[in-house]
Image 1: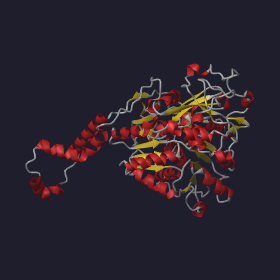
Image 2: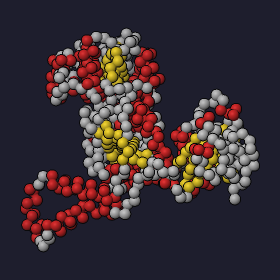
Image 3: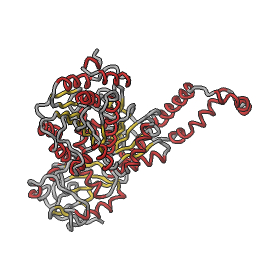
Image 4: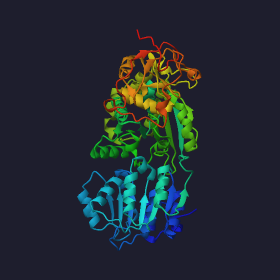
Length: 595
């Protein structure tokens, strides 16, 4: 078994390693450190979050830096303030026995002048977020023209956050002959482009398989009706009493709403999204790290850079927009050799997306059922019993025991147990004694969440207009200002589509689309008298016997439409709102008006 001394670390680093209690290097450290110490080279290292990447680049960087020179020699770019500070603190721990080495963190939300003064005093290593780094370079506050090493940590995260231009601008101010080390969990095209543009025949190290998830994480999914998503989240939490989790939502609005609902229902929860101030974010993260918060509800962007150990569960309240993002979400658990669980709550129509994710992570999702009410009560009951059994006795209460025994005199052991558990347990019984089954059969023919009081619509745009089911659903939700689960059963054909809302939204839907045009063409939404099944979709014709679909000139070379808000939209004035008279409405011909 390899130890850190075998990797070639010097005595100062080995002393720090011993102080921190590290015993054996992780796989990425074992593969990376000897190469970086033995030669000057560019490197691409692919490994999941939590595998020890900071030490993998931190140890070689510290050992190679000339601490007697005040010149900036190493630059580390990381996606978020939290990760920037974390890397800085870890490097300071690694270098505690290296005399004269100064490491400075550069990030937004703090005084830029104070940071400039810290740099001016001499900083051999700078750890920075791209935005603040670019700003300080443009102001002449930082000179990186003589750096010898540049590390891009969490490169895929930085590019997902839109830092491509910032990174390329920063690297353009650095010497071409520097060594560049790129560390990433996945290898999307944007990361590959950075490697090709700024790196010279890099050594590639892969721990696991490119773009795959960690093998320490079990991937589960739960199929429920769309309207039951929040209740499913509550049950998953209650069925795992010791849960310490990150709950992912797709939008800031949903994140805030879910967190507020959880808090109102008595859970230790908080929201983490882009609308929080830096001070609010710091307070939330401090509470989460201290486990005062058990459920951190977060957007993908806000959660980037979170590095908290022992997260037991990741819960995907909603699937991400991009499949690769799932890898980052699930990578928040199952870290440092520990096991974790990634739970995904899906509606029936979303199950197919899991198959695409399986191809990326190269692991299978396990279909599981949301526990029923009595099952959760049983779990909580035995959890309480075990907690009582394992609690250490506080002898400070000994003085009060005679009076307590007097109060409880006459109660049998059985009655006492029942009363104790009734006091602690009444809220779970009252919540779940009549709870319905939330599970949905994936093979059923309709979305049982909306069997009653639902309206199905025909829309004369389809895949030829650049839509798939998810992008159309997102467009409709945003345009109509509805929640994600309020638009469902989206079925996209070549030149038209179907979707459902609850019947109470029908007037809103038809009103919004009454006067809409897309690039000069009417966009019609009509109430469908038929379910719009896939087996009939390709045979639908217009009432007047004309061509199926829409103006073919519209789609040529157009790509996906750039939909904007209603007040600044490509849609303007246009057709009447009508109700379909046939099972296959089209875009022209006579229609019977809604009665």
